Image 1 (spheres, rainbow, N blue to C red):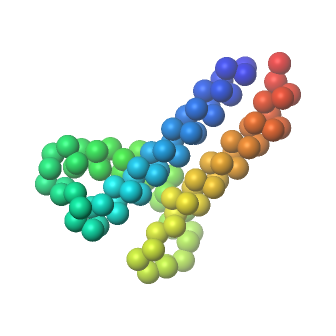
Image 2: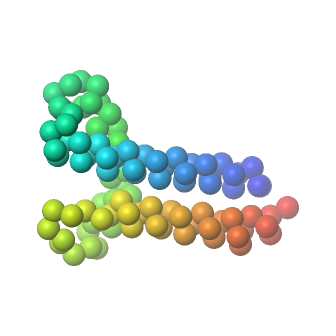
Length: 96
């Protein structure tokens, strides 16, 4: 059972990195640092959007409009960190 919890923690860590990469890529696209006409950039952006949007969309629908500022990745990362702490401190020690 601990192996399953370890895999869950690794997947959550990986998802945090994907959220960070998605946010950075969206900034690079917004400031025209990278061009979405490039096929590789477009494929990476589409992949990151499809992976992160299911977690970000519910948070965006609850949050008020903050203008051009999107803090939903930060909120999702904080939620993931909270879940990791709960697993590490409360669930993991009680599993044999």
